[in-house]
Length: 108
Image (cartoon, rainbow, N blue to C red; front, side, top):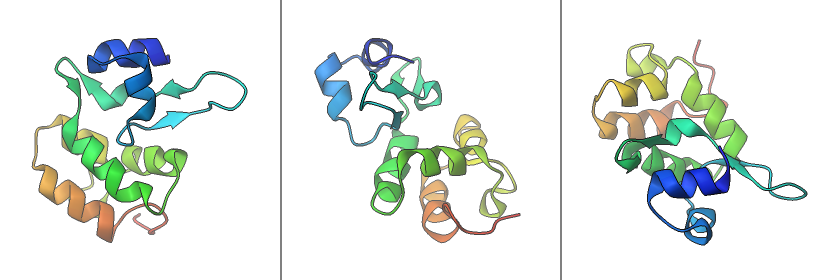
């Protein structure tokens, strides 16, 4: 989604959404960046995903993090982190999985 759409979903200005380190984005050099829609719900930014993004961002880029979020994870009962989050399960276990079985860990 565009910066404007992401800002509207997050309930913040376009400048603020661009500065959010807890949001994954692609692009931004020659074309405006785009944001992954899975980061938002009816209430705004999904906080449990945002905290995982902040945690992983220290070592991985946005595409690597997004890829990890979409893949099944053994520590999350073989659910992807996105499905785990959507099912309303605890964010703490999601954070532990990010550290112990994050991007570049062979999980399958």
